[in-house]
Image (cartoon, rainbow, N blue to C red; front, top):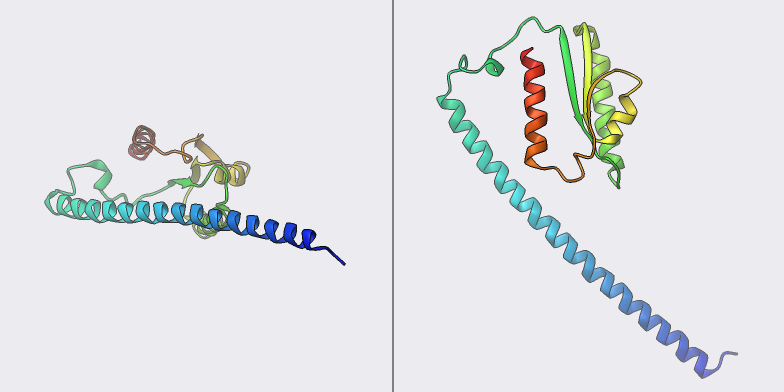
Length: 162
């Protein structure tokens, strides 16, 4: 039969565990609130960007830029796939890879040549032995920045125009 001292030790341990659990809850709640705020700001940015693009598109002549001209004889395709490098995004990566793989299986007969470019290690690791890899942008998805996005956009635009 345990003594009163042993019961008190167990009670104190349970109280310490309760304190740690409460602290962990507070930390995770703080992180959740920060993530929700970032999501809210991103949604606001998206709305403003859509508004700007729609206003610009209404004023543009479609023949003004070569990227806006339709091309009916498409023989080559370049798929640009953005996945994560690592972390707990397995469901996201798996669903994205499954979707792209299905799209390729449905549409590969429509193209003479199909190439891939990647931003993120997961997509590259899956498709590297299956298709022709044009570019693999390493360590871009962990902390994306404007200069990397501009570089990728310019390279993809040049490939499209050529």
